[in-house]
Length: 172
Image 1 (cartoon, rainbow, N blue to C red):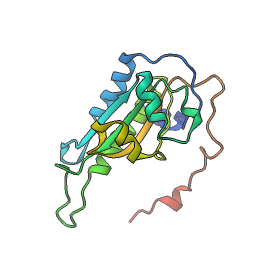
Image 2 (cartoon, rainbow, N blue to C red):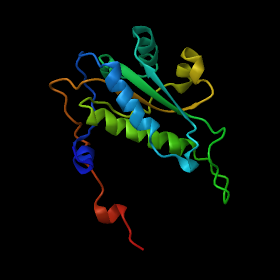
Image 3 (tube, helix red, strand yellow):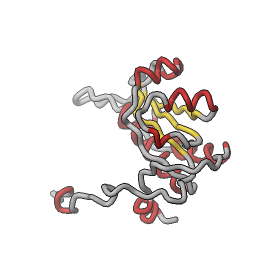
């Protein structure tokens, strides 16, 4: 699939089938994130693939979303300010930007693999860090429930709402 087709076809899926997702497919998705660019290529990001029944139950307890129940895996993305690029002119740390770039690559790779997901930002990060101590030192940026879309999965009515080109873009 061409990139232009991929970005148009991808949508935030909130209904998954119970079909298992292979480790091989998950590794390809993670590899897309691992290869994503980061500021000065310092890669201040950690990814956690939550796939066991126990891990999935824990992470799902951190969100209010019942539609995550059939997700076969959840990929958590976290960044750390330690070692991340800091812009000299104003001291801005880029760990959240780097984590978001990697997360976007993961989101697109999920769709490219024939699976579905959505970027979940509404979750209890404090609780997630308590349940998964290995995440404690990271800024948790996103959760991606991953699975095959249910046969009747559809984009939300808001999916096609976009600002016009002129509203969003200004050539200088």
